[in-house]
Length: 328
Image 1: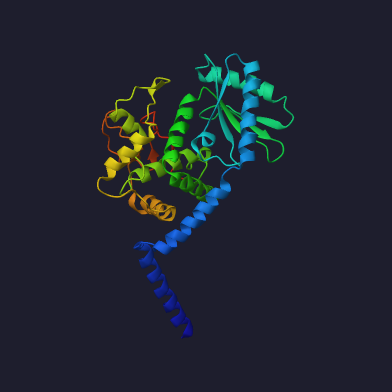
Image 2: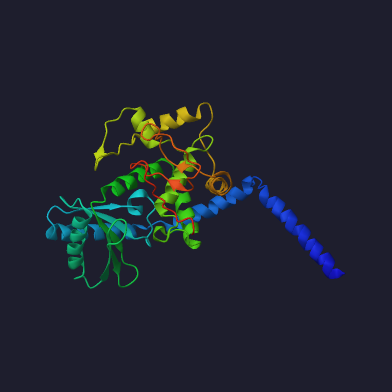
């Protein structure tokens, strides 16, 4: 009957579709070029305009002035997207308040209570304490849209250094910023960009991108930490952790040249890179710790077959920054 023919045709179409999806081919140059244009336009639209940057800078200046009057020695240090190059006008501003002597969790919460009491006087924002979080914070949010909101922590100094490290990677290759903004938007749209719910944080996504770009052929990025160690740069300790990484642009370019040998520089467009990023983590990656530095001299070798989407902290080696809930 006609319905049987239609059913058979549909079944045949579905088999062809499955065979095609199980053997993904390489996208055409025209397709990736068009995709690149869309990704770059999208990322450009997300970036802050001069007035947004001015508003953010004024906010940080006033906060510094106010907290310095209330807490002896308080110093405001922004971190996260506002430092690493991925900040957009809709993003919260992450702030570390450095306070001498507040080294324990309880001491930091006491400082946050002190800050909360002061910030509660402002009629433009409301304060939401989140002291049960892994890192205790105050969320200070505006009562009307269009104003800066922020998350405030105390002496979270390694997060500041991590943000600066990522910022240096972004300065080496603008493609990283475009990819990061677009992958973050993709993850947020699918409800998998919320660490508090056991899904992937923005920091984790960026580290995955750096790891991926370091392993392109030829590499698009080197390891800034490995380069600092190989050049015997002076250690830089923060909270007892060696946080050195290379910031010398000339040395970084020399390292990239050495890594690629006789091959030309990596010139893949962001469309190609995005598709290969999804291919890598969707098809090729099966297990193993995702790192952006060589940790073999710091940790004994371990069996990584049980490690899935474990993303190593660049400075606190052996600490998983992803903490993904597999049930999600």
